[in-house]
Length: 102
Image 1 (cartoon, rainbow, N blue to C red):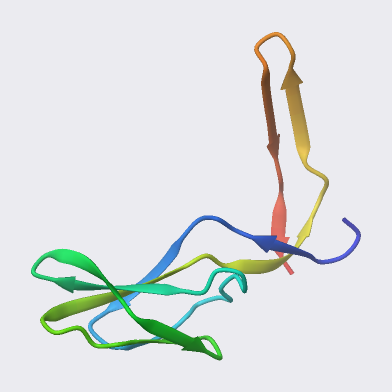
Image 2: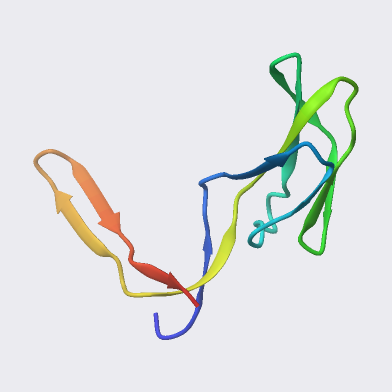
C-alpha cells in the first residue's frame, strides 16, 4: 500500500449517443474489452465494436436510433489497507477499501 495500485472495477460505465465513435472517459480493463448495444425499435441489441487509443467505434446497425458502449474501468489508485470485520457466529465477513485515483 506504499505505492500506486491497479484497481480493476466490476461496476459498468456507459457512454451513449447517436454517433458511432465514443471517447471513453477512463481506461477500460485490459482483460475485458468494451462492448456495445444499439437501440432498435425500443430494444437493445448487441452491436460489434472495436477500441483503439481510448476511442470505441461501433458498427452501424440498421434502424438504430442510439448506441451505448459499456465497459469496466481500471484505475491507478492510492489506497490504505482495507477495514475488515468478521463475525463467526453469524458467519459474516465484510471489508471496505478507501482509495483515491493517483
